[in-house]
Image: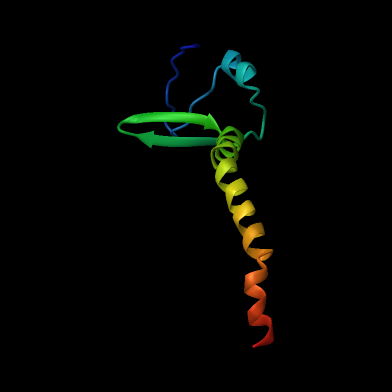
Length: 83
């Protein structure tokens, strides 16, 4: 864990120390996500959140795809084609 303090400027800006920027691979143009939670400010790279969501929902989307495939290939539903 890397712990450092920073000061908030008059404009509400902070500078992320170089050591932390290097550690996280932050470069000019990197997108960060700020989350306020119970008096805490959490900062994370936006791409990490996107990757985590993909991982969290991968089982659900796989199951949904399998279910849709089973429904699509269901021969019993073909009786409606003649109506």
